[in-house]
Length: 508
Image: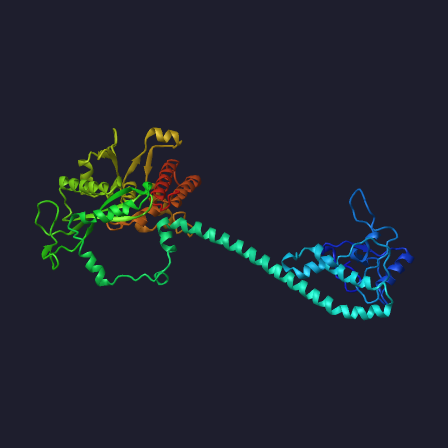
């Protein structure tokens, strides 16, 4: 049942060949056995011969069902042996030309099962053609043809091996292309277009472009006189940069922030003047903070510092407003439109908002933009400072949500209480539970000191989905009342808001 029982034949059904069992009629069975030329071998009830050992005339012709069946008196005559049986009358065509073409043209060889069958049938037909003569000359000619047959088999095997290697190489190319495409998608999730473009640039060793020396760079930088205030010497370079941008990339956000500096005077040898004092207003004091103004692209994440001033932390509102307007005029004179002004929630920045007409009250109309240069500029607090202040307000007191909002979202009450988080965390810690729902919160997240209140990571952990799910689970278990669902809903909203505002992807 494993395959064909003929000599020098290894065809099986798995290779696409049809097999026919030895007939049960003793006379026909004896004829089949004689033609097989196998001494001292007796076929079993399951012994079979494949279809290539039968001439074309031994099959039923023009069947309506299209099946290939043997005639009741069919006899096998095609065998790859030195002394094969005589052929019957047949109209079967020789396949020698087909094999000749296969051996001459390697590129046209196909490794399908049908051609394997043909390659084996050819060897048999060569022997069949010789069998027309007597047995002794036939055996001599077979000995002469054996090396050719072996060479042909070897060539066909090499061609099949090459074809398999070619298919494997093509599959590997397809796999590598898919892998590159997947890597590019993954790369675009955390890198912007300009960063990907910079990484794809060839290294300097390949381009053989020499970098300027340190002395050359410092000599060039001395030509820029970046005095405190607006950096007017950047006007022409910035205009050139804008001219190379797309129309959709000529929008920016302006950021204002302060940093601590050492309060002392220094002498600039190149300019031959002292610096370190306050540069905005009429004060002659030594400054301890540096006020920096930076712009950043909306579509692509390019950045540029356009101005700075030395202050002592208390800036006059009018001077501060005029400095911001000078920065806006400078940027928009280069061809870039300012869409928003962002800063932290310090005292000087909130005083600037008041001067600009920004009004944020518990009741009434809230104004979050001002009109300048014939367009609106929106005020946006810094996200990190805002979430820190929001965490402190949630833990310290209660937040009341609008009635309409609570009705739309089917909330049980209007009050958001951070005390629910504190109560649940304290009960889990005091209970000594190994599995805690608020495992991600530390003691300094719930009971922070003045320094720990400035930790942004602590606020992010507090307003996370883990905290919201822990409150919802506690309500289901009966540990907290139903009103805690309002706090869980509020934490989910803040988590979604922070994810959107802190995302580096335009898709989100």
